[in-house]
Length: 74
Image (tube, rainbow, N blue to C red; front, side):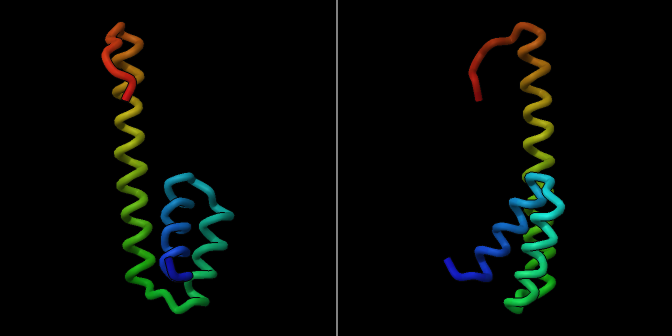
């Protein structure tokens, strides 16, 4: 994996993990490497979608478990 791709992945991970210092660091590094703003925005949007989907899925799973539905662990 090249450095630019690595930084885009790190930006996405920082957004998904809600880590402000991580995001700031990797955003700066990506810009230093010449990564385009469109690519950065795309990585951020992808991470937001992943985070949002995961948040709602775990909420539904927890609600189901608390109501006694025990099927599956996914």
